[in-house]
Length: 102
Image (tube, rainbow, N blue to C red; front, side):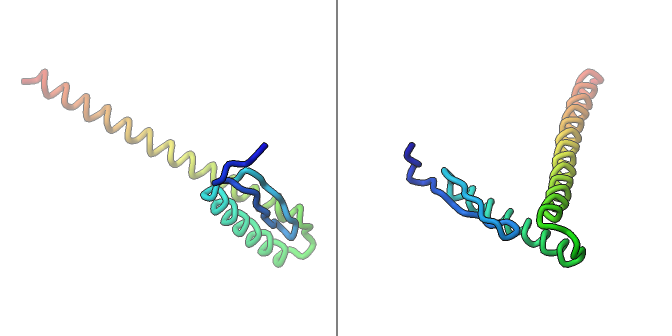
């Protein structure tokens, strides 16, 4: 299977271990490299604070923290979307009440 010209194979290092990914679009590569850097930074922080942690433990804790933050952001986004819908419904209701009150 030939990769399309704008997709390619990349290597990402996390906690000193290299991982290969293939068929990656350039914009996805940038995001993956930023994510790997964030993970490595967090792993290094945990390993320096807690010397007894293995790489796997530090990666697991980092993953838990990042996914927790992701879930919070998703919930906030959903709440904002609901608030927008409620405001739209309220505005529509106000307009309707005003139109029948004339």
